[in-house]
Length: 397
Image (cartoon, rainbow, N blue to C red):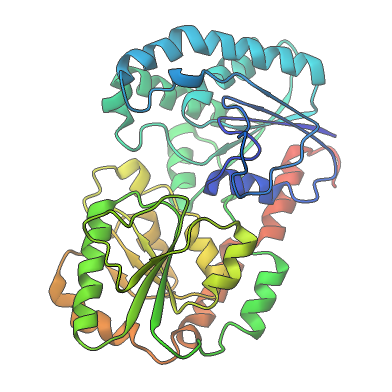
């Protein structure tokens, strides 16, 4: 079959969302085409690009409303760029005639996807929609204008409701979309553990960590700097109580200039591909994930699940989670006891957290819950098989 992936990002984009798409297309038994709002990266992103037969894009270049003149650029994106992008997508559909379109409506890609896939497509297409994030997160309403963001939310929900099949990135998101649209998603679609990851957990993850300081890993981008700063203060107090620990970063961003960064016990390793990163994570004792305490960005906090959660599971790392009790992360780490939680900004918790962090064999303590969580929700082979059945319900792969 011919599959067209239509979304915001190109096949070689960094980040958790693109990594999920590439993982779900591993060994796909068909032809893959790609349309996106953004052009492929001219340099290596550190991620192996998804192999595609052809990639078309409708990049607005500097028109993306990111830093300056965001309200004016948002208006230009809606009135000028969206029709151009819709024309590009329509032409590409006519050229390749796909059997199925896998739409991942994210941010500005929502406008052309809605216009073409729900309004202008002359012949019926099999449409599968995946929601990874809502467009009204990260204060986009203030930056782009509430009217535009409201339109994006409505159109994204329409792409979900009118698809032949659909899924979303977290269990709370699936529940909300069912309430909003009446449509039940096929599954929670996120990054997953491959058979070799399960083999590692079942045979090696319980091995004690190497001797030396306690190593806490952070992989990815920091989105909540105040919470991260608080956590470093908490760790500093724990170090003052006699615990030798390190905080180590694997990211395409650098944080050494931040006020909370301490060179004597923090270290940056730069960005690594998933395959190269995993052996390093498996030498650590813990993985750390912060989300917002305030819940002001509730549509992100409550419905998006950081991909690093699954990365840590695959590495066999117990997880230190921090955030609002209603966040998707804290709900998951409550349902599955994969590590300690920090749910309030109270530095007096350092003593109790010290006892939990300084365990002699933390991986052995949390291994069974890590494995149970992975088996229940993040089995890549099962997710992939379910997704491919959605792409073509007429004949099994």
